[in-house]
Image (cartoon, rainbow, N blue to C red; front, side, top):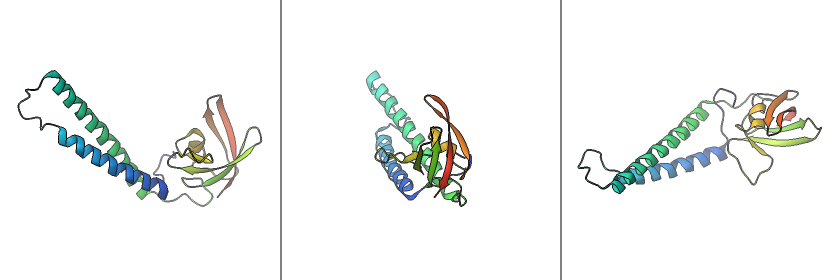
Amino acid sequence: MTGGPEPIDAEAREALDEELAELRAERDSVAATLRDGGGDQTGDRADQADELMRADEADRLNGRIREIEDRLREASAAAPPAAGTIGVGSGVTVRFDDGTESTVRIAELPDALDPALVTGDSPLGGALLGHGAGDTVTYETPGGPATATVVSVD
């Protein structure tokens, strides 16, 4: 991204809020199955292994919960991009090296059903963030570096 807090569109915020609620419920369910750690540890090895797996799952869930909470907190502190500057939610028309033009929308979350959407953490999306009309950006593709020129920003 651009190094500072990035705004988040309403659709992405809603998706992250939903994921956060699901993760918290799952974490609570897993936590309810964990022993308090202070009692008699008289289980066989299978019980102990199962307990370790649940503890690892609780740690994984807690990590993802922290990531989402941080992202939502960061987004609430971010201002929208300046007029004419590409940010999350911007529609951008770009011209590629081969002369073709394409209009894309920069989004927070991927959507397989929207081929005109690129995420801000994708190579092209990340290269475009913070730029404006007339700027040329370089980004990585599987075939090597490529460039695109920003034609317009909506």
